[in-house]
Image: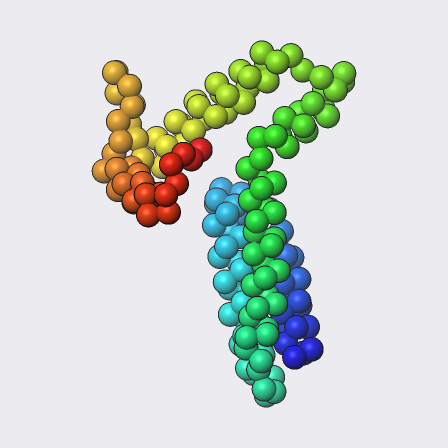
Amino acid sequence: MTEAFFSGVCGFTAYLVLTACLLRLLQRKAPALVAITASILVYMVVLLFAILSGRVVMFWYLSATYWFLVLCFLVMFGAVYKSISLRILFDLLNQPTRSELYARILERYIQQESYMSRLQVMMSDGLAVQLPTGFQLTEKGHRIAATIHAVQQAFNIQRSG
């Protein structure tokens, strides 16, 4: 059991190193996709090494250790990566007076980043198109929105975003 725990911790450490490197190398890829893909690849390599070592593999202990650590990391990564509150704190930290006008914060984070930037991402991802009268979902955008809506209804999620 100790060896399985150690293998899980070593695998997680390798995952952290690989993820940090890949996030720097693959800057055009979605960070969440990079982090999740790396976790699966490292897990397969850890299992392969465990099997090739010739020893009895305590699969469940190794898996539980590795995935517990990875999931803890992914939750923290997601919170830090997408936290508007942290971004506002960092912006305030970088101001010479450590302060900013409320109107500028509102403009930057609500109007520019939360609204306009997201519309641009939706268009570049082929989820919506801009028409003279506004925005319209593409077929791809409709499929994704309908699927997410069905999942939200299944889990009784009444508000999101």
